[in-house]
Structures are given as structure tokens and as C-alpha cells.
Length: 148
Image (cartoon, rainbow, N blue to C red; front, side):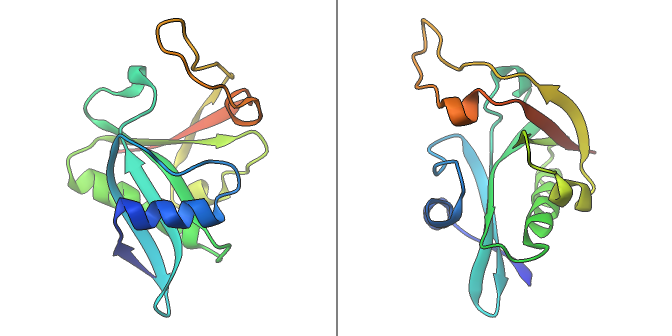
């Protein structure tokens, strides 16, 4: 297995095909990478600006999606590669979230730390209408981070 670059369109195609519960990333992305094995893409990661404005301090990025075809260790490789790339670009912190029921084993394997339990909150506001996905948005999450 090796890390290779991939563009957003191809990464999103992979996400559309394999991700269990989230759609492709529409905006705010900075870079993507993939894991390749024997010439085949077996996982992708999409990194972008933090979704939460409160986390967007100019030195923080968020892993917005990771997605694999189930290949062992591919997710940990992606998280590690994303952190190395973010650091090389001058970022000081990389965050991501797992949903309730997800173990975070790939994140721990890549050296990330659990930093907060996040209570569900709707993104739908009077001045910013959003569709609330009850099965995703309204579940507790855990925030993880890698810090320089």
C-alpha cells in the first residue's frame, strides 16, 4: 500500500461509491490523498476547512472524509498522511469527528488524540437554513485531533 495524490472529483466518486453515511464533500476542501494497492485505489481522504466556524482559526484543518473499501490499515495510513501533509503546509492542528458507535481505532493507530465529546446540534439556523439529517447530525460525536 502507498499514499498517492488524488483530485477532489475522483475522491468524491470513491466516497459516493463506498461511504456508509456521508455524501461527497461540496466545498471548503484544501487537498485529497488516496491509498493505492496493486494499482487500485482502496481508500481516500478529503481535507478542508473546519465545518465549525469556531474551529476555523487559520491554523486548523479538518479531515472531512475518509473512506476505504475495507482494506486493513488503509484508514490509519490516510489519517497519518493527512497530518504529515497539513504540517508541511504550516497548519498546527488537524481535527476530525467520529459518530457514536465508531471506535476511533484508525485514529488511535495514527497517533491522534480524543479531545472532546460533542453533543448533537442542528446546523439549521434562522439566518442559515439547513436540512437536518437526524440519523447523522443529531447523533453525539467525538472530536479527535493531531497537534504539532
